[in-house]
Image (cartoon, rainbow, N blue to C red):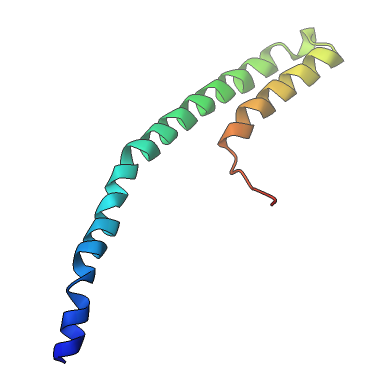
Length: 83
Protein backbone atom coordinates (compact mmCIF):
# COMPACT_ATOMS: atom_id res chain seq x y z
CA UNK A 1 0.00 0.00 0.00
CA UNK A 2 2.94 2.31 0.77
CA UNK A 3 4.36 1.89 -2.76
CA UNK A 4 1.04 2.77 -4.40
CA UNK A 5 0.66 6.02 -2.45
CA UNK A 6 4.23 7.04 -3.35
CA UNK A 7 3.49 6.51 -7.05
CA UNK A 8 0.34 8.68 -6.89
CA UNK A 9 1.99 11.68 -5.19
CA UNK A 10 4.18 12.73 -8.16
CA UNK A 11 1.13 12.51 -10.45
CA UNK A 12 -1.01 14.91 -8.41
CA UNK A 13 0.72 18.11 -9.60
CA UNK A 14 0.61 16.87 -13.18
CA UNK A 15 -3.10 16.01 -12.90
CA UNK A 16 -3.81 19.38 -11.34
CA UNK A 17 -1.93 21.09 -14.17
CA UNK A 18 -3.76 19.14 -16.88
CA UNK A 19 -7.23 19.63 -15.44
CA UNK A 20 -6.52 23.22 -14.43
CA UNK A 21 -5.25 24.18 -17.87
CA UNK A 22 -8.66 23.56 -19.43
CA UNK A 23 -9.71 26.94 -18.04
CA UNK A 24 -7.12 28.57 -20.31
CA UNK A 25 -9.30 27.50 -23.24
CA UNK A 26 -12.42 29.21 -21.90
CA UNK A 27 -11.77 32.60 -23.57
CA UNK A 28 -11.09 30.85 -26.87
CA UNK A 29 -14.36 28.93 -26.77
CA UNK A 30 -16.33 32.00 -25.70
CA UNK A 31 -14.82 33.93 -28.61
CA UNK A 32 -15.71 31.16 -31.05
CA UNK A 33 -19.28 31.08 -29.72
CA UNK A 34 -19.56 34.85 -30.16
CA UNK A 35 -18.17 34.66 -33.70
CA UNK A 36 -20.62 31.91 -34.58
CA UNK A 37 -23.42 34.09 -33.19
CA UNK A 38 -22.40 36.83 -35.63
CA UNK A 39 -22.66 34.34 -38.51
CA UNK A 40 -26.12 33.25 -37.34
CA UNK A 41 -27.36 36.85 -37.20
CA UNK A 42 -26.00 37.57 -40.68
CA UNK A 43 -27.51 34.36 -42.06
CA UNK A 44 -30.91 35.19 -40.56
CA UNK A 45 -30.78 38.70 -42.04
CA UNK A 46 -30.15 37.30 -45.50
CA UNK A 47 -32.75 34.58 -45.07
CA UNK A 48 -35.44 37.04 -43.94
CA UNK A 49 -34.51 39.48 -46.71
CA UNK A 50 -34.87 36.84 -49.44
CA UNK A 51 -38.68 36.21 -49.49
CA UNK A 52 -39.53 39.93 -49.64
CA UNK A 53 -37.86 40.38 -52.99
CA UNK A 54 -38.47 37.02 -54.67
CA UNK A 55 -40.59 38.62 -57.41
CA UNK A 56 -37.81 41.05 -58.31
CA UNK A 57 -35.10 38.39 -58.51
CA UNK A 58 -33.99 36.68 -61.66
CA UNK A 59 -32.38 33.24 -61.70
CA UNK A 60 -28.85 34.59 -61.29
CA UNK A 61 -29.77 36.81 -58.34
CA UNK A 62 -31.53 33.92 -56.58
CA UNK A 63 -28.50 31.67 -57.08
CA UNK A 64 -26.18 34.36 -55.70
CA UNK A 65 -28.44 34.83 -52.67
CA UNK A 66 -28.44 31.08 -51.98
CA UNK A 67 -24.66 30.91 -52.36
CA UNK A 68 -24.24 33.88 -50.02
CA UNK A 69 -26.40 32.10 -47.42
CA UNK A 70 -24.32 28.94 -47.87
CA UNK A 71 -21.14 31.00 -47.34
CA UNK A 72 -22.53 32.12 -43.99
CA UNK A 73 -23.15 28.51 -42.95
CA UNK A 74 -19.76 27.10 -43.96
CA UNK A 75 -17.65 28.67 -41.18
CA UNK A 76 -20.10 27.34 -38.59
CA UNK A 77 -19.85 23.77 -39.89
CA UNK A 78 -17.31 21.40 -38.32
CA UNK A 79 -14.13 21.07 -40.32
CA UNK A 80 -12.92 17.56 -41.24
CA UNK A 81 -9.34 16.80 -42.17
CA UNK A 82 -9.16 14.02 -44.76
CA UNK A 83 -5.50 13.13 -44.25
